[in-house]
Amino acid sequence: MKINRYRLSNGLRIIHACDEALQMVYVNLLYGVGARNEQYEYTGIAHLFEHLMFEGTPEVPSFDEPLERAGGENNAYTNNDITNYYISLPGQNAELAFWMESDRMCNIDLTEESVAVQRQVVIEEFKQEHLNRPYGDVSMLLRPMAFKHHPYRWSTIGRKPSHIANVPVEVLRDFYSRYYAPDNAILAVVGNISFEQVVEWSEKWFGAIPAKGVGNTSLPVEPRQVRQRRKTVYRNVPQDALYMVFHMGGRCDSDFFPCDVISDILSNGYSGRLMARLVRKKKIFTKIDAFVSDSIDPGLFSIYGRVAQGVTLEKAEEALWRELELLQKQLVPKSEIEKVRNRFESEHIFRNLSGENLAGNLAVAEWRGAAESLFDEVTSYRKVTPEEVRSAARELFRKGNSSVLYYRRKQK
Image (cartoon, rainbow, N blue to C red; front, top):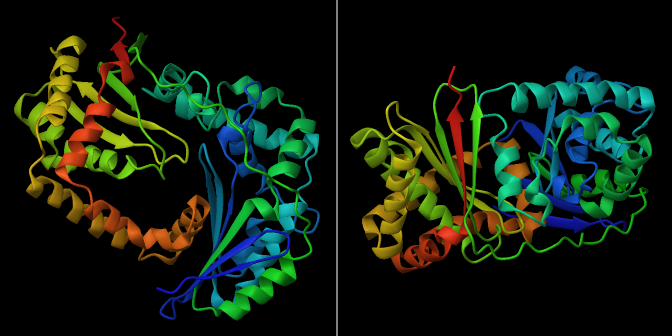
C-alpha cells in the first residue's frame, strides 16, 4: 500500500492511504499528549481532555449531532503517550470531519460550567472502573512500585479522583493551549479519497491555525532497577491474584520484539506455556496472562494470574519463576517461535483490514517514526531468533528487575 505524506507550514503532518474498495473515509487525528505530559499534582488531565473535546465549541455546540446526521461515527482513546480521535464518514461527507476537527483543535470553550460536567463523568468512571471493581486498582498499585521517577508511575485515569475534581480551569487552558496544536498532531486519512483532495481540505481547514512551538517533553529517565520490590494488599475479591512486572525497553527499542515474542510464548492462548502448564496441567492458576506495554519510553512486561483455590500465593510465585527460568536457560524450539510468528502475522493482517484501524495504526506508526514501519512489523518478528529470546529473558527476568504484588482475598 502506498503511503502519501504532506506537511503544512504550521507543522501538521498528513498521512494518506487510498483504498478504492472502501465506501467510508476514515479520518484519524492523533495528538502527541498523554498522561506522561501531566504534572504530578494534576494527573488524569489528558483523559479529562478526551471527554472535554466532545463538549463542542461556539461554532459546533454538539460534536456528535452533525456527524450522526451525515452518517458518521466518532470516538477517541487516551493512553500514557497519546490521545487519538477518529471519525468515519461516507465519502461524500468526508470534508465535515476536517472542518470539525480543525474547529475543536483551537476553539474549545473551557468554562467552569463546561468543565464541571466532564469532571463528574471522569470521577464516576474512576470510581466504577478502578475503585469499586474487583482488581480495578491493580495498575494504581503496580505503577508506583515499578516507576519512581518517570510519569508512567500513574495510570491514564490519574492518581486519585481529587486531581480531577480540583484541577483549576487555568491549568486546563494551559494544557490545551500547549498540546492541542497542529505541530503536535498527525492527521491520517484512509479511504476512497485522493491525496490531492486530502491536501486541499487540510490546507483549507487547518492551514490557518498557528503552530504552538511544541517541543519534545523532557522527562526523567527511570534508573535501572536492581532490587526486587514487593507489596501485599487485602481486598474483597473472589480469588487471590499474583501480579509481576519487569522493566523492558520502549516500543522503538531493540528488545521490544524479543520481549513481545516471549509474552506470546508464555500466554499464546491455550497453547501458551503458562496456560498449558500452570493452568491446565498443574492447576496452580485458574487464569494467567502475560503482555508487554506498547509505550514509547521504556515500559513494563506484565504477568498476572488468578490463583486456584487451595494454592498459596507463595507456591504460585515459585511455579511461575520456574517457568521464567527455563526461558533464561534453554533455547526456545524454533517451531515454538514459528507458531508465535504465524499467529502475529495473521492478527496483524486482520487488524489492518479495517479502514478505521488502519488510519489509527498509521498515525501511531508515524508518531513513532514513520508510517511505513507499520508494514515492517511482521519482518521484525520474523527476525527474532531463539538466541535473542534467551538473551532478552535473561535481562528481563532478573529478580532485581521485578515488582511483585500479592493481591489477597480479604477473609470475612
